[in-house]
Image 1 (cartoon, rainbow, N blue to C red):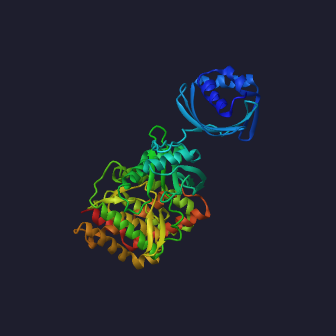
Image 2: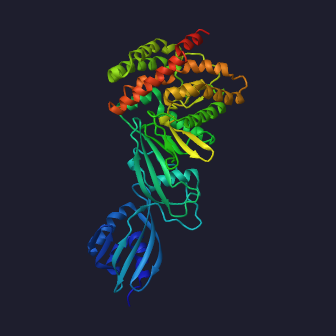
Image 3: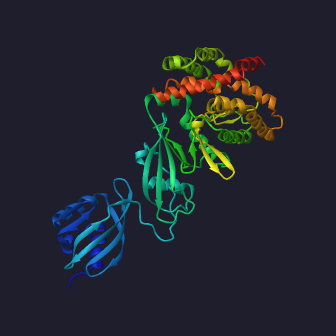
Length: 487
């Protein structure tokens, strides 16, 4: 009388694999047995089967299994395996065997999957997410670890539909991840935004000087406790101090927002939204003192001064006659005042975004108007709230529009800050705005060293130079710097 499929599968896992009774293969398996794997079929004789199992048993695998279904001709088993030698590891799989004349004759193998089959009622163990070297390393397990570390009730991530690279940033590589769960996603994210650092000798050296990767990690960790700030929700933000690898996983806002365009500039409604977002940020943290993780230009003043000087030469070489001579003259004059500007006494300080150009802002249209989302927090710092405001208005708003509305925006910003500190007055705010009207110019000029040498690069830089220089003249920024630096 032949053995049943259930008898055969029990002997296969428990006697052959767990107890090492390899000669039993000659009794319970056909010769050859036919293995069906993805894209491949392999026939194994008894001797080949025995050699295969003997080789794998050197790592002391231990199987537990459960028969899901069995009949006269087939048996289906799900199994868990723990490897106990050469690095402990857990794997699982599912196999379907055909039974012919009391022997296992064919096997359809799912492949070995990291982890163990879930059990009803068992709580998923939250694992600390690894820090990956590149976007190409993203897989379902990593995304699962990210989401479970935030919310243990997150359903199982079944499939990553796509990991689509987006943008072409100088310092980072980014991707939009589309995922599907094994259950109704309900309120769980179905897309995520991933941002990883780029690593070149030049970028690594710049990061060592300025620390933008670590600062962005610290900022997003800080913002976790302040969901009212107009920044995307952070799911994971970490860096490996040994390798320098940096991973940031954020809420994906792309499906409901429109990115800003630096050349086009912001509309009045978009600028209104940015001023509201900056006002809330600055008012909430008004009175913040310098901290190790917040960027402060003053200790690095000489370095940034050199960068500006070198950038000015690069700007002239790149743009040539595309920039008016009077603007080049203004750029040179600011070099003489640069250190005075950096070292100005700024009064009450706050947390700054540090780089609030419209390229770093997403706009969401809703029933109550436009909302501005602030992204790219690698330059988060501490200083005068007028720095951020002037940086945005003098570089991201067309000149005629700024001239028409800038005093209103300054007044609205100051009124919001006065709610947090009644001593914050409009006259002082306007005076500091005058001095900070150079803030975007101080960033535009060094950027000439890294902006792509193309028609788009020319258009971008000439637009910024024109806006920056017009604002410096309109507000007599140099006069304000001289006045405040002697107080």
